[in-house]
Length: 237
Image 1: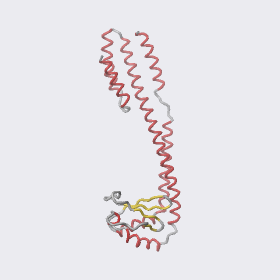
Image 2: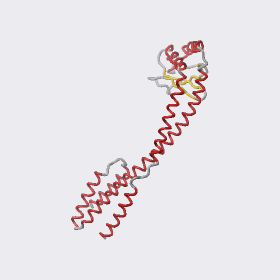
Image 3: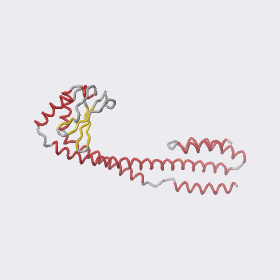
């Protein structure tokens, strides 16, 4: 009865706790099996218990391997989607960088004055309605609405050619204007950063694909143990 009970508990754990070590289960199952073996004077029962225990351990490891590979395949799909998004973002950002490269210093100064008059704390935090269709140097300006803005770390979003760029904001309208202008002046650095992000994404995809192709290392040992267990059972019966 104890052996049956422990086997049920072990099967339950092996079906739901893939990261759990089987060593703690092995000790309990073997102890009950030993008691049973001594009670009926059948030494092969102990050997059978040991083999069955090892088989259960291998099945747990095999299941864990299968679930790990499935998680890897899901991660690969997510990373491939991210890579596609980054590719589009890179292409749009390269076009935007080419455009920003043609803006003169006078253009930046004029943009600073225009943005300073708009990006006040009240507008950023939604206390005052912002003008519709805001823009700066060909980039649209989006200010999150009430309930969407982060009061502790407010921000705005610049957009052009389908690509969005988040810029943190502060309390001072002059400081906010300076953040926007400085961001645009350093815009030429963005394509390289995005390209590095995509390259890293592609490397991760290849790494995960290599791992997902690994064969299950436990199957051969499991088959061998199953055959051995059947031989032992035939001798007992």
